[in-house]
Length: 390
Image 1 (cartoon, one colour):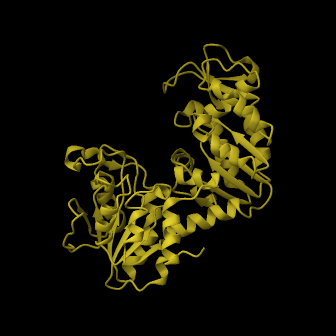
Image 2: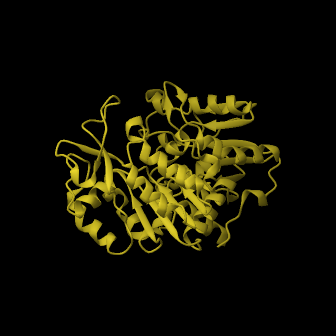
Image 3: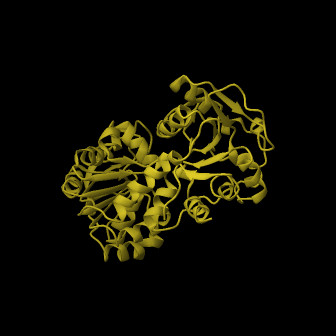
């Protein structure tokens, strides 16, 4: 179904309210990674160039609903406003009290304070959605990273805004994921890392129907190893999901590590050792894949027509356990097919290893990325589709 797009409307002089995902990491009052801000910039620039009065709303962190930002300053969008202004040269004005309306200030961009502090946001309350809709002439849903949330600022507002449409970033995300999942170039390889099978069981099951090989890493790989009778020492794994791992292996090729990098602790100065997979000691933790496994994975990834990547294969934040994820990143970067990567840790790894311009598409979504892969409907997209029918 065709969803109306921002580029279809005359924006001149219109109050254009854009829901973006500016939920970026902030350290000591400063933005430490601005990938999501950078991704939103084309939409903001387009609206400004078309003469719109641009209003942006987003969330940050995990605020307590109904509690003023003044009482939980760690979730304020103030660092985002400063970073956006410094990045672009735009005059960015942060507005705290806006739900019941406000006078537009003399600014290029008005940034509304954290939307998730508003009562009724999480419950997708019609009352809040109506008030947010009253702030604009055109509502633009551009936050793919929150499209899986049925909330007032993502889905509810769509029914009440004078005009509701998809922004360029949301449109690009849906097209890229559709390309990777609905008509992919063959063969298809998925790389799924992370700490727990339980958190990604549904996506792993869904991928068995879509891919030719499923490379698993992190704690997920440890669970698969344990399911195959490998002693994993003190490694993070889920004994209750060994049968689930075996069921997934029965459906699709899951290449398991043949060597690993182990350690006794996660401290930055901890020692690391490479061990054959059958030599992990009881007091050791598997924290990365070894060089033989890296080569094995590269042989599978290199000829892939389509790559779907979500999650690192080791504790890449620590230099001693970063080689595996670096090897995966370099191989994905060198692949000549179509590659799509998503999830916060994946974006951090891409940034750390400097391959952003060599991945075909980098998704800003984490949960939304996974739910799309699982085949679930995204509430914010469903709301736009429903609006287009009326």
